[in-house]
Length: 219
Image (cartoon, rainbow, N blue to C red):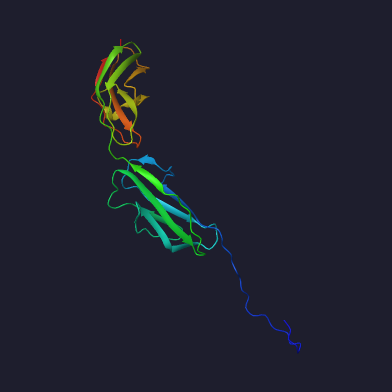
């Protein structure tokens, strides 16, 4: 700039203006896994890990970070762009809603939809009355009575066999859906004694104990 006496102004300090209109994004993992909302889990002390990504802009404002479970602030703090929290005391059974509030240093607020985890830590009951109703040279048909499951729902049954009466070293030989209570076990050797067990599993991943053993000898 020049005044009327033709004196030319000198430049002052340069002002760098950075514009940040983009809101940060928030991601959540449960026990190290990226789950879908409303999914069942079998832990009532899940590790919640939150990552806030501001795409290299103004960065997350740590003072605006709130991780809440059922509306109650957990007290978890954001260190850089991450926060980790393990509930204490343990969460109660049923549906728990997780929310995350955070803004960047330009005041843009993240949008994070409420995330529901469905907690079921109780295993199904042990299948009962395991028995066989036919045995041939290379296969056998076994049946059992159904388990009950009051949480996430019964997922399936898995059948195990061994040539010794030891369930701890038994091998899984097949599975059936939650409404089926029998299976034909094939691939058996002739003139061999087998020991069988069955377990039930729910949709949260909880497993019952082994059933009582059933044994038979192929022809």
